[in-house]
Length: 205
Ligand SMILES: [Mg+2]
Ligand SMILES: [Zn+2]
Figure 1 (spheres, rainbow, N blue to C red):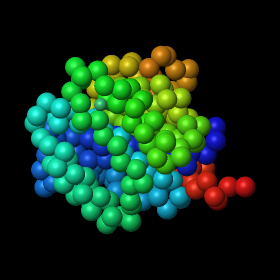
Figure 2: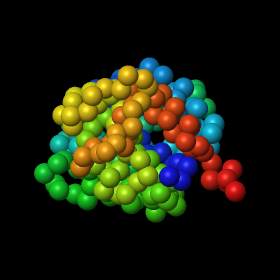
Figure 3: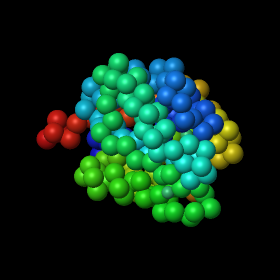
Figure 4: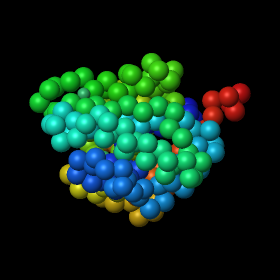
């Protein structure tokens, strides 16, 4: 496996507390240790990108302007850890729209890859749901990581995956739809990625 230079992150339940149809910037709350974990990855030179399903827009529960305010708050909280997001993508559509961008479809990956020049063999996806894992697998990314925060524990159980004893556990052999890695949280995912040499492209020979 090539070292990971780019990490695509789910938002709700992965970086921040999953609040149903979050539309108020005051409700943005980083999960414990998430800021520190992303800071470790960023200092190693890993570029961080967001790919978030926001069907609340398509369902008329909140607006694109609400989402921008929520993301501005998220970026403000991350900036306190010296973390910035290189790319941000969201799918505003309701599931019944059958759009090409709602995870596990790969539209957001394709948009980020085009805009940021991403190499699937050097990119990982991390999220708390089967749809996040599904995007990573469908896009042929180097690693799909399921975290146990947010809805992750329920999704791991549904996939028949027992919780790791430590911060992470590699899944091998994998059944269809299963992630490459199960991590307790973003800190566990960062441990694994950094132990495998994740970092800046230009730092490598
Ligand atoms: Mg999520
Ligand atoms: Zn969409």
